[in-house]
Image 1: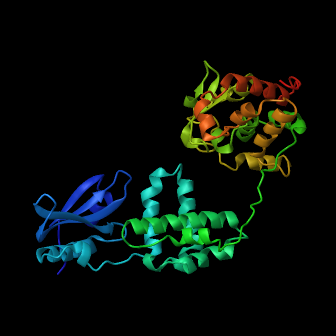
Image 2 (image 1 turned 135 degrees about the vertical axis):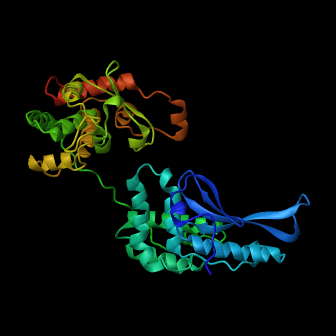
Image 3 (image 1 turned 90 degrees about the vertical axis):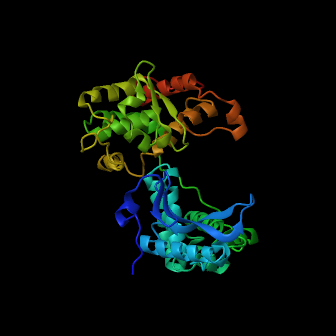
Length: 396
């Protein structure tokens, strides 16, 4: 006969944050992040707490995505029976050890709110799905040691080293979480492998986005200026602002302060995780101001109303223009080369214009200014050069 209670499958899936009772000491706990887990509260017969009162204890029964309602009720009943017999479930319950894949998916759900965007969250679990789950996904998480971890890392360690490095970090996180929940003991095998130097040292080759020579930019910009497509407007702005693709395409009108001629890109769209102020030049304003007439939420609206251009729109425009071996991101390198070779700009001014971190943590703690005025001068000079309205003055 099935056990019953106050909760239903639909309620388990949809209840908001808080502790929701099913009856007989079983609770569904919903965290603000949306993670859902079961706990059971029991009083162990004949045992006292440190204050001399009855020993009342909460025990975790697992995540609600892994443990269905009926199973949670059965486990809760088992714990209550032990407690009535004077047995502490902490030491007497027969625990079911979850698989590596089960723990990994639970960690992914619980950490979703901490990632900058959904793409990063998807990348985290996809790396494990592609390279770990096929080999160790179905193994109990307490049986994974160094040989099992090496089985995942070795095949891709040299050919896809960056992927392997991230994979090792993510496997380590999953095993650390499993240990914190009592499913494992001892040293993390990922740490042991690293300390022992089992895997060969791989010197990563830096990958650079292909960039246009700064001397060729004015002619390219003139060609762009003759085009009416929204992608051309966006690419012109990206070139002048030296901003990243996602920063430009996600730009909203509310981020622009016309009075001070500043665009503030919010932290959630910045690689650094901090707000970034971009000085707007006359040439930049000439590109975006006519677009206000569209009354869109986004400055560079795509095919759908109140939605931005596609991430591929500017790159596809480059291909249609038959501009080969150049990426949109590469224009940031173009600006950096111009700033160093032609403008003679100080390193920190050029770096901050690209929203790069400058100096050590200590240096940044004391350097509170984002050098907006000095960056404005540099960006104005860049705009004049790119648009063919003036020549770069060395040491400017």
